[in-house]
Amino acid sequence: MLVTLIGLAAAFCSTVAFLPQVIQTWRTRATKDLSLPMFLIFTTGIALWLVYGLFVRDVPLIAANGTTLLLSGTILYFKLRHG
Image 1 (cartoon, rainbow, N blue to C red):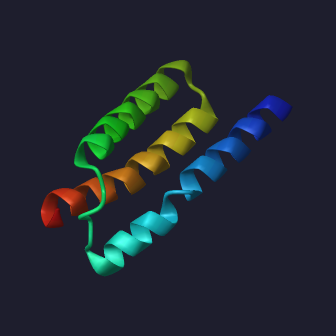
Image 2: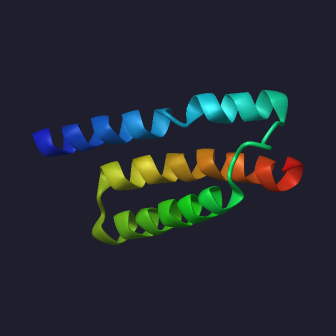
């Protein structure tokens, strides 16, 4: 139980860290300084972590990577649209 709680706390922190960037990008539509290759690679990695979490049925991995995929995917969308 303690290990799961630590995993959920870590997942929360690393996922919420993306929220300010998503909000800033959403408001300004400015993505000039964001690296497209980095966000493509990162978003792919997050999607793979989500698939892995689903295979091993790990709630912290699924929760963190599902949410982070949504957030990084939003940034990637704005980068591709307004890049």
